[in-house]
Length: 338
Image 1: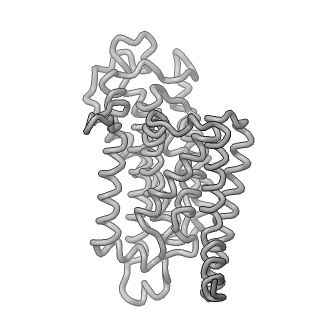
Image 2: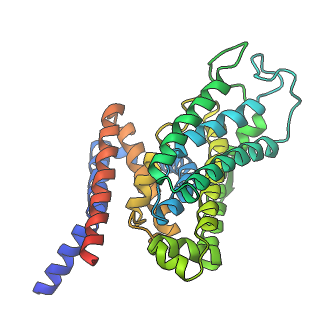
């Protein structure tokens, strides 16, 4: 083997070290439990990954603009609680709103999505107008939203108990599937695909998409070239919030209930999946396909670790290490380019 080829292989291994680690981890999971490779597990992974893809696409745009969003998981939780509370079955004895008529499914989902979008708008205004860093802004929003969710969730007369007894139509909206060629494709996968196509078009075929990448690549140069920085950041954070809201509504129906802890730590999975999928924290770099691949890889690992019975607390340690390693590799690439 030539020296140049050895260098190319070494360079590829270093730049894609996190993927190598994740694949190795997957191999270990399969060796420990070969039954992990099954059609049913694959379908479950796709269902669980679908809402995470929607969340990651929202947070991906934020990262591309050199930002971050620590409030994503809590916004997902608020949206889940709001939509679930408005879509309980009329025959359920412990409805949050006993006198509320049965609503069309789309209305509470829209309400939850709009509420989440407004929170995204607030994030965008604080970041773009008040010049507060995204980390501090979204950290504060994370705490505030959790307080709002918990206050709304802990309502008399039943107090802080899971919001269950959801409308069967609402449950089917997320848990249903369509049979294509003998393979059942979950509705959630279809929703995630629609959102992915929309985001791909936005990023690659519109002026706002070009502005997002311009701001992420070099904010000062983007402003000089005529890009409206405030408007671009507002669009990014509003859209991110709306995507969290939609994902939260789907997540409540997928699980069959919602609590004030729904969505907790989801932002970590989304951020890790984005970085694994090639979205750079240095800004201006990222693709929809990369984010989807990152989410799928991360979800396979998550599901696999649970499947072989790894302690949930140990799983947090593994996730944290993956995030650190992924960002370290991303930073190394940036330094090397400079």
